Image (tube, rainbow, N blue to C red; front, side, top):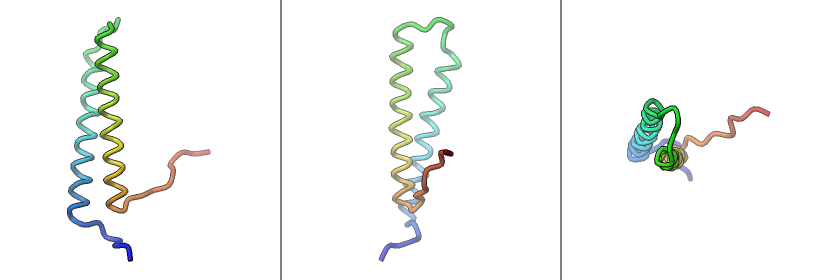
Length: 78
């Protein structure tokens, strides 16, 4: 039988994953605030790296949420 209550460990893992995702998103925001008007190739590389990190963190947060029993259906409207 499946336990409907997330364990304290699952909730802590989820909190940490959410914090990591927030930090990654804040890093993207900070980069965009200092982005020059004309980005150079190094800026594009940094942006791609930051987006990749943010997406990995989002995926980890979603996996932790699923493990904690917080699965939801799609939120997209038709």
